[in-house]
Image (cartoon, rainbow, N blue to C red; front, side, top):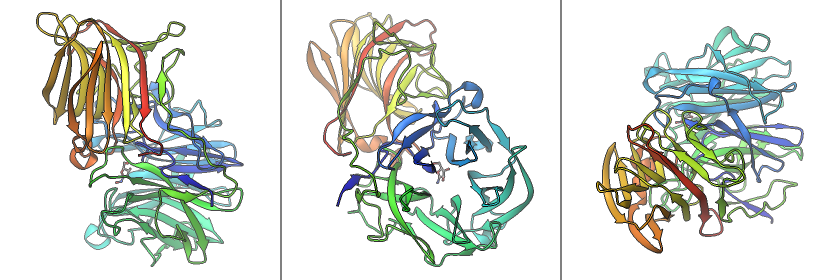
Length: 519
Ligand code: 6LW
């Protein structure tokens, strides 16, 4: 039986949402404070996903400045109706509450509209277009009576497609099947005249689970599907390779199959660093509702191909980016806004200029930093950097980044006498520890990091290779660091408060998975 490898989108791509138009599938995932925001992918077979662009690609579409890395754009839903693509998403602002935005586009590759703010309370917004063309908005919010109903509730209002405003009464749909935990990630589907409300419960960690309710009218009343949870790995023990499964969205294929995209993580010895990834799960509709993974009841690393899909191309080859086009590729992200004035490719010549910004990586503004997701546990990343630091406060190089207050840097800098040095620093809860320093002969070196199950080892090439030190893998894990994102690896430069601290030239950046398969 031909198979494919899960996850279909490895690395930090949480909260997947999917829709189909004809033979084309579109998928969007959360991006938090990374910019551009809300990455979109296209596929013809659900297995081979290619970047298509981003919903948020202009600064006028969102303001992320001041937010923690795991705040920002959470859990979008993408739907298509009569030639228009709709994306609804929460802008989560940490302690300042949240806002719900609606973006539209006629071409999913963009441009996308400026946001329309919906008067909606809560997170995880979704849209459902009924057969009569009416559009129903759902989201989850704190329950008014948590002592009776559980902490969260799913609610619904109509979205007027002319004014793009919520209209009519609020319908309280459901408080979940498990009730002890937050009910979230609602999506409504209609099958054989029945409305199915599918959500997630248990929180996005170990207890994550897909639960469901059904109704004869879109606005309810909804009754809990007694089979809930319909999909979870919460009971599967430490030997299981995929955990925290949930937050699904369903799509029908032209061949008549149904598949779900789900988030899940791949922990190693109880901790994961790659973030929540996208897994593809077969679904079978029965009179009782959807059955997830009907043959096995679980999400698998190797799954049968959707009907009509071909075995996807191998995607674990090393990639060396010489930065010879005018714009960075879609895999590159900055934090909270564009960095065009700080980080610029030099088309023709090749290479990337990184102008040191006063903002350090601990800043909640936009530092001179571009990074890509770590998508493979066994990975080597390297860059060739030229930078002549004038002071120990000026640094440029490689960063392994989890949160603004938790990351590691391997940087070209200088000591107090101006001698070039490469310094390895770990930053934990905002406290920086210098782990190693090596005097180097010139201002051009190769900086590298090797990641595997045990940790991240940092090396420098200055004529010969030297290992500077390593950091245990769990240091960067969500279990230890919290947050909603996985590890990103990238390039940065800062004057640590100093403006005009010079610029670094990055000749190339290489991302090399070290083993076939995602591991
Ligand atoms: C997302 C929600 C969740 O909105 O995490 O705990 C949030 N669950 O569904 C961010 O990914």
